[in-house]
Length: 463
Image (cartoon, rainbow, N blue to C red; front, side, top):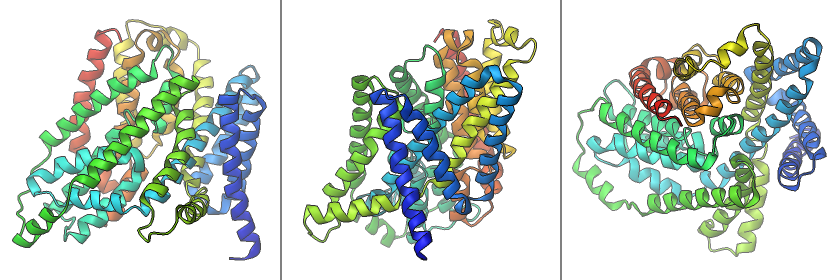
């Protein structure tokens, strides 16, 4: 690598460190100027990484600039709103960068590999449920990073992804379980957007309500999945018996510990879940590195030094996701500003009789637009900001939040441009629209129908 490129790479990662420090200072330390420092760091990072960004991320970054200019020019009275959205985008970008930090210990973890191996070795009639629930909880820590690991393990076990093959259903089970995790995970962008935009929503209470909804949808997914007839050979059955469930249980315990620590920090510091997550993830990653080591028996100081170098090297890995979600946040905010100025909009937003139809429309609009390759982040930001502080959001915050987070989970399962479908398609050797619009079509339709019932019940219950 030429010296200039190497220096630029180091500077990019250093900007992420500055971004994280500024975000924490702004939200925990109360240093208002730190928000502007975070914004400057994010802009500088995107400019520096411009050549490494895919076309879609560049398009969205440019679109966010156009959106800001349009608001400043056409709606100067809304300058404070768009500036607030720009500052909020730094928090989302920082969260994604910290999730990238967690990928380093996850990728090198022998424990994770053994847990995934146990999941894919279950008997065919149990494999779908095992990978649905296993993929769900493992993705709390690893997000979409769990999907390539599951795909690798399926191939190592001799699985195939053709029509009627168990390998395809196992891969889809992991993907669907992972997508449903976004309904309740405080480390998810969708959860962060919705909980920070909905008036009167208690994030902790919503976490438990959303978790219950996700468990119902997971159960529905398992009960309605098309069974694949297959049998295990004696050799495969013997190999499966040699695998232990303990690695999976240990990881689930780590997930629970991380969740508890996040909730404690949320309450103790009176900060949002997203800020608590940004604070805890680097610490969690370092502790994980020290506890698991690399199996060579080297001193903890050596493990720590090597681990810190590895973590620093990953800081810019989420450049695409960080740019994309930050830009989408700004674009969504700009659209909100212009739509809210449309004559008659206030009467729609404040209508109490249209509450349930609006919720159902929000729930369905997210996956429908995602199926058309329209990024669901924009739709979520738009709906959350349009209705989050309306009488609907104030009177039925749980119902609105459920509609949006469930819509998010369905969107990433059906969108041909989501990381979830792209990774699954790459593992299965097909195009992403086949995964989203063909393989997942029946699944999404069933889940949408059940979700409408759940959101309606929440609305009728007045929550």
